[in-house]
Amino acid sequence: MATDHGTPVEIEVDDKVVRVSSPERVYFPAHGWTKLDLVEYYLAVGPGIVTALHERPCMLHRFPKGVDGSKVHQKKVPAGAPPWLETVPIHFPKYDRMVDEVCVTELASVVWAVQMSTVEFHPWNSRRADVEKPDEWRIDLDPGDDCDFATVQRVAAVAHEVLDELGAIGFPKTSGGSGLHVYVRVAPDHEFADVRRAALAFAREVERRTDDVTTAWWRKDRDPSQVFIDYNQNARDHTIAAAYSVRGTADGLVSTPLTWDEVPDVDPHDFTLATVPPRFAALGDLHAGLDDTCFDLAPLLEWAGRDGDA
Image (cartoon, rainbow, N blue to C red; front, top):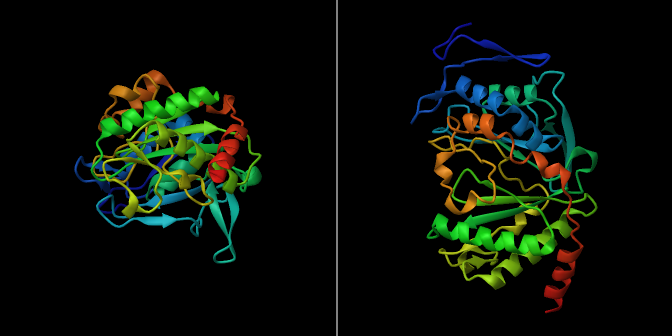
């Protein structure tokens, strides 16, 4: 049935068909981009977004009225999901309850989520084979309120230097906001607490090398002109936007994989749902090699012990 937001359309995605209602609803009023534009964006970067989300529990950030409206943080799969949608049960100790979260294994699941008004995809850093053992160490370079992007870029260079010394291969991306993320694949041999300890030890080492960084946990204790390396993003049930996830910003910014050579000169505002598809078509998925690498956290856990002793 047609509405003020257009006649529903059926999208064929591999062997699935996803019905998209209200395809002409404007999600990004500043540019006039619609729900269908968002669907077409995710189809264009399909291999990249599926790889980023593959077999990970995923929280959905939904914007039923568009990005100018309220945001819904959706952990539990809503009623009416198609029978083919794959999920993973997650236990939340605080509430002592099990919740089924979306677990993307195919592009149709992404399109279905967009049909349900999802703009952002926030996956766990573990996979459903063992959700309590992360396989991804995430370095989140989060600038303070008075910190410019040039400072973030300088900190990224120092982080890259430390990674190289450790023999770890980092895969950078824009956050889709004002920061940068770096992902490192690790063996799923440690629980969240140890991965977080390793992340903190790394952050402290970067902090030792530059005055641009703080690891102070409380915001009141931070210099707003510094970059906070948010090691707590490696704690259980903490998530950040996936590679190729659109963000709920007026300009439809995208969390976009980069090469290290791009980092010094990049402008994160260049990457939107309009500009990333041609970039993806030209360069492919710059995070495609992430699963071909694996870093042993042992040196960082030794640093964590050293820091604890100090």
